[in-house]
Length: 133
Image (cartoon, rainbow, N blue to C red; front, side):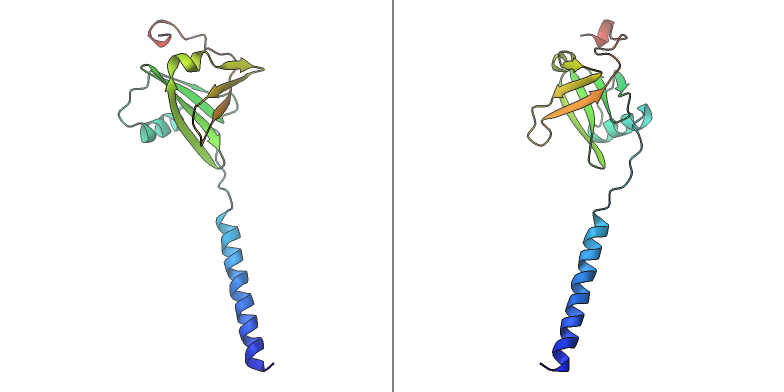
């Protein structure tokens, strides 16, 4: 084995090390702050443009939200370092399982089968009139 072999081996190892470092750095999650009503409305407007929002309920831990838009429930839940948004029929959201301060909503989606959102109570007390239907 000559000197050129060892130089090539060292440069290859350095290149592989640099690629591994870039891949590791790219996977570092961005910190996402808790969800508030303003941020929830921005996410909803981006995902469902032109859809009127009747009401928004933010999770007590800031990791999710539920919004009502006509006959649909728009669900926001934290997934990784971002949020996933899905729509389901409003009656399905009202009938979702609520236990120990957690609302478990079946999303009927392979990518996000269910969302768990922390609420003090469900359905909300201000769910009257047009919001209840």
